[in-house]
Structure formats: structure tokens, C-alpha cells
Length: 217
Image (cartoon, rainbow, N blue to C red; front, side):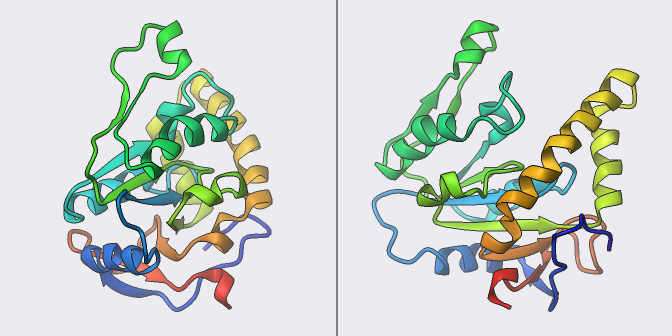
């Protein structure tokens, strides 16, 4: 596996059911009551964060997903922590529903809102850079997806297209992404490591491949 310099490789990988991962997040956030557990899902672009969040949402009972890409729309790549905390995470910690239209949505006439209904047990907040020191007080547990950097860059380029403009966008993103993650080291803060692409052998419909927290070794 090729990782960026400075990121240690997780060891002790094993297969786990998706439901077991939900329980691990519940166990990692004891004492939460009267509000949802807020679980961050971080990893590089192309790591599979959105897919993982949806898989967890489907088996976690009453739960919802927040995408940091929605919060960051028309903002700098990683300059959205305060907006997320004040308008999404703070209301969740109060046990309130969320119905938030960022300023950029209003300015550009983007319809809809970032919405989380009241009464959820889990809110999965997925996005590159969400496990950061600035947001630590608002996160009850967290997951970091670790995978081969070459494969993740290939998937990122495939997702965003291969036109010259999109290639430039991916290059600009990586120039900001790698230094940011090396500074924040989300793999060292996460309660659990999940394998991103390429996935080791497991049942892709029922299982995930997990490893203990890197920070514990």
C-alpha cells in the first residue's frame, strides 16, 4: 500500500460486519443521551467516505448523513470548520433538528438545505478534513478510511472527470489535501480505521475490513 509520507500504515486488519462497526461507535461514545451521537468519517478523496456513511446509516436505525462538501460548497477546500460547528454540530449537541442553508447556497440560488431531523441516534458527518482539532469538541467518535494513495487518486480523477479543467481541479485539491491531513493526522485521532480502496478480501455487501486505532500503538 502506498501512503503519503508521514502516514503510518494500520495493522491488524480483520473482517467485521457493518452492524458491529455501528456498535463500536456506540461503545466509543458512552454517556451520550438526549441528542444524536456525532460520528466523523474522514479519508482522502476517493476513499469511499460517502459509501461508508450510507452503509452505516442503513443499519444504524434512526440516523442521518451530513456531507461536508455541502457545507464547503463555494468555500476554500478546508475553510469550513467554523461554519459546520456553528450551524450543524452545535444544534445537534443541543438535541435540535438542523435545517441550514449556507450563505453560498443562498447567493447562488442552490435549492434545499442541509437537514437533520430531530430524534436521530447517529449523525454520520463525512468528508475529507472533518477529523481535525478544531472540531474535536463536537465529535463523539470517528472513523478514518485508509487505502492506497494511487488508487484513491485514480478514483478521485474518475469521479470528477478527465477534462483539462477537472484534472487541474484534482491537482489543486491534492495540493491542499495532503498537507492538511499531514498536519491534522486524522488517522491518529480516529477511534477505528476502515480499509478504503483497494479493499482486502471480504464480503462487500455485509462486511468491512477494520483495524485498531493507529494512535493506540
